[in-house]
Image (cartoon, rainbow, N blue to C red; front, top):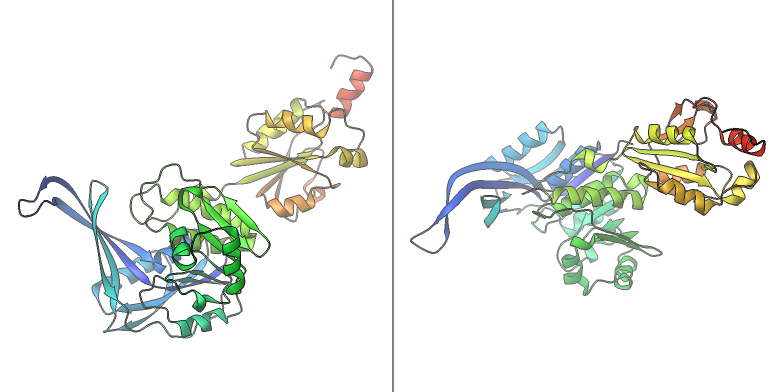
Length: 415
């Protein structure tokens, strides 16, 4: 995974949880009484975005405005604990933004918000990063003049927008609103309307999170839907922070790959109570790739596939099309669709792809696997894609090959 320098700028918050239990109703007014309160603190807003970027190995710097108060001290302590650099501006007129959630047995009873940013952040960026994330909660940290300065930087700027006037975000790389935010600003969401927003604001694209329906990327020439990966939804707090932080961390892999990882990360955090960061291992699967004709399967093939699967979480098998096989080897015994169907029936094979080139090099470039596996008749230096991923060689099963199987069948020998 390539390490990226990311600057996150926006409304830095502290999420405070008052956790207790409730078995009584107040005699004063009919509301629950919460006993045995335990208070905990979690980074929220732009700080949660920075924490998400940090989880995935990005070198993250957080910029924002805070007050001279106890809450800002808790925030800086937690950032230091997580090795996140920060550059804050302080003012006595600012009151650090805090969201207090009073919980009873994992159920939120009430939320109390307080704090305000009177003086927005206005310092110049310390350096030009690979990506800038703007986490705008409309709390006062970001002003339109500063947005214009940010967008002028020589790197992609990804913005989580707020409010109904998005003209201030013009020229950004992309925006990442949720469905409600989009529809409050532009009306009912559809691809045509989203594309009009992209053109109006001179964006590369827009990534709209759709709740249980997943997320959709719309650009001038593409519309990509990614279905949700959430198994159970307990709490959507901070899900937007997770999406933008993960998407930005993996944008260098391409929009589709960044969406896939952001989708997994969001599905992971909504399964937790309260503000959470994604579990890295649930998002970053080790992808293993192997390829060949796989015309007549034998025990050598099975050994290769089983060994390859044991090396990672997902096994992709690429097979030559019939025309490709004719060019590089011989006439196929089984056509490509039958070969694909047989491979798909083997336990541990997650995906089978037919490719038409003589080599799978371009396919490997697109898939970006972590490991390429080949049989013992190869050496690492002659494996296609060795410059794109780690190569591992599996020993051959003695006496087993498709050519030997065909020759024995022709001579009526016992196979």
